[in-house]
Image (cartoon, rainbow, N blue to C red; front, side, top):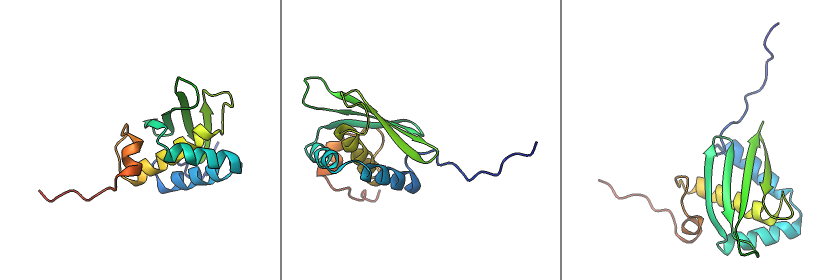
Length: 130
């Protein structure tokens, strides 16, 4: 049997194609979720955002509950999905805020695990020549 000729699969959540796919996914959220998620992102409620595998991003987002929510963003065959420990479970304001934080982190050239508040509030400056 001949192997199938398939288009390449985007496997890294850091590529321009993956970030564009994440932007498209976030744009599909309803307007209320997008507004609340943007407020969460701007308010600094995303406490961490890291890539634990090429296709997997985890974030910790403070919500209205005393304990933070855990958000997982999955990249599968070029499409993003989300899971959240909040009652909504997926495609929620926490996932939206985490997605924005991931995009900002990657575009700022930050290493995984950097505090997203630093990315939002401080410009990324070129390093001084050695």
